[in-house]
Length: 183
Image 1 (tube, rainbow, N blue to C red):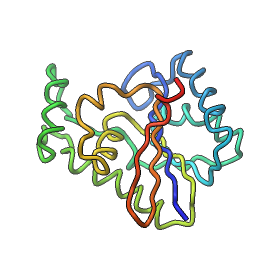
Image 2: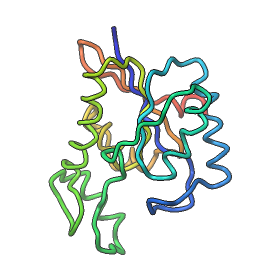
Image 3: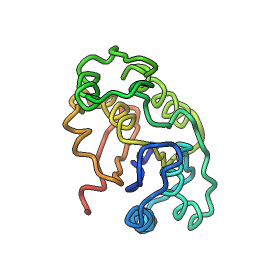
């Protein structure tokens, strides 16, 4: 029996810090996610502990009466602890060189390993249909793990929210973008 993991990028937020809440539009998008998943079986919800991720999935959690499991490993990737005025170019470089690391930050390889560990634990569990809520950069690295062609441009084209389906069978992992198809 295939397992499915629905990878959700949080809805529109007011900023990047840990405590940044969703915008009014983001709160509305979170309600749209309830409708989006209305015909989808869900056993489990795991989220980044960032407020914007929690707020993105709370309406679905309440509607389905499924507790949100917070997992630090789904937190956004730290590019650097220093202010990088050219962060955009630096981020682009990390998609080409997965080992590249800036002061106080994680390499793409390290961040990818962190989120892939969550996926592997979900696969080892009894859950068949899991929703996993996280952030654009680290989600991009997860998708890159299963599709080498997922690059910086793909990251740039992510939306808030966005939903990808990982279907895991004995033959491997199949990746599909779902949100774009209906929005």
